Image (cartoon, rainbow, N blue to C red; front, side, top):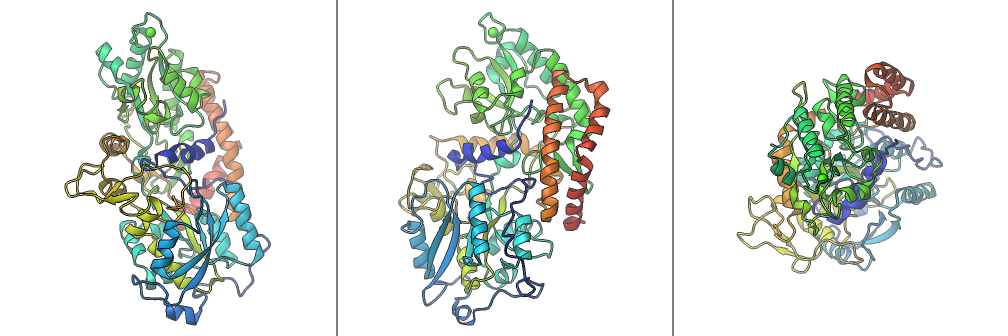
Length: 584
Ligand SMILES: [Ca+2]
């Protein structure tokens, strides 16, 4: 009964990339608890290399003098070449002979020379390490999504420069980003208070509220039942689903509640429901952890978790929970929900219905499953995890210490946050792949005047027009929702917005999410080891308690003791120390 927490994160990338407009949240996120990759162990820092608080970016007087003031173009009068080590993305056949690259060069007078790294993380980290160890650094390191702790290693080794002075002097487009997301300065800085990378901004609103649940509305209607609002009401509804033959085929073939433990997105059984008992995050990199009154806590060690297990065990004994929910992957989940004859599933949890249904498919069930608002638990708790940290990811662009043109490099990256550069790097050329919306057009939200209409549907077919999402971009929720024109033939984005805003956001508790933290490489290694043991053990015990293999009433204390044996206290202590360092 093992469930894999990393796989769902990876699957977000794979599965949801095809609905870019709907969701591309975590493209550059690395779970904080992954073992740290060794970054250039061979390039030990020397005293000279180590940046100090007063170290300014490497000076290149001639080039520096030639850089145009913030916001003016071209960036340099005499053409220069910058080298970019870039992680490639799906669907881009050529970065050199590429429309976005050409536009950049024309606009900035900077020629780009690429060194392309593979998409798979293990391979691109290997490539990065080779480049770092070679001592011949590119000017810009882009699209690696280098997490804070690895940035710390690079900074300690004197391989990258802080961005703060460059932003102060040359910031233009990025200042708009900072104005909308001032928290960037807090959460993406290293322990010396400086920011060594620029982020990727892609604020996927519905992804910030991804613990959703779905019920088959025709069954509620047929049995004359109301939408459940509490955990007790859910139990009653599921009992009716099980016993009253709502699909009308005379067979007791109904599966009241199912889910998927692996390979899906927020479809595991503990998601959604446990929030009626305890805050159960799992939105980002810190599954099951939350912050309360400045204390970092683990949901599965709380009394509320025990109450939730008692509830689930009761429903399991009543035959309301599909035993397969503990082993299903997304395909198996979908096979149940899209049962070819009669509908057989009544209730499930998932980030959106496309995780268990054929979206806009022939069965029409995509229109028949409706969202269930957060349920009120026995203690009155009613909440929806909501992360305020999903708006962007750190490590999208870094400038190397050896760059002769740090100012020009910064200005080039700064430009990528502009509306035009973001539109060109993600969607393509104005008038061809997208166009300005006409006056009176309708936006995704149905409010305001949209700015752009996408003419060529998102695809990952090979092309050399955009960089897909390899460049840093500035896609706020305004950009994604109010500026984008609604396409009635593709209503998903509007649905996702409305479900999230109307049904889940009112119960959001963003203050309980653990912010991105910085760990030393030693701490990261420890977290990696501890996390693996804790995830395996807590997941096994979740399944054992729900199915009754372990008795929740007599086994809870031993479970808590076993969590300690598995290192829960050390794990939380490391998080608490990192949290206190930044926020206390
Ligand atoms: Ca039936």
